[in-house]
Image (tube, rainbow, N blue to C red):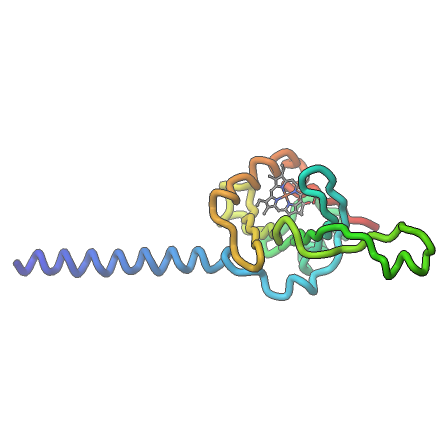
Length: 166
Ligand code: HEC
């Protein structure tokens, strides 16, 4: 009986530790990196087709430093953000141009994406952790499984497609 009780107790402790560990793991990638909106501009892009958006790629200090030094391998701690919006006509701007020509970002679209460098932690996905937030909420793991297989296409530049725009 006593041995049984010890086993039950041990199971609870180990089980509890697993849950806490899993929560801690999730915590790191289930949160939007602090201050990302103050990251600096790497470049912009326009995606047509199904994505149909206008996007900006931003980098934290480490990422920007790496880009500016012309290096193609990012150090641990580098974070690259990808913001995207619907591209909508601006009547306000068109008025002063006197014709329809101005398009500006509208509502956020296609999620807020991040690549977070930690070579050891994310060794299985080229050293980058991939996250996406739709309306501020993290997307499920299944959606994140698509990230690395496509970014693998640019393995020669540390899995980062975007070039630094001068
Ligand atoms: C089908 C291919 C494909 C998939 C899937 C994909 N990406 Fe990308 N990603 C790109 C391309 C191409 C760019 C550069 C142009 C652009 O932003 O549209 C890019 C840009 C990025 C950037 C900016 C840094 C860079 O590499 O240029 C981040 C951050 C990013 N993606 C994160 C993600 C995340 C997170 C996922 C999964 C939820 C994901 N991507 C899925 C192709 C892909």
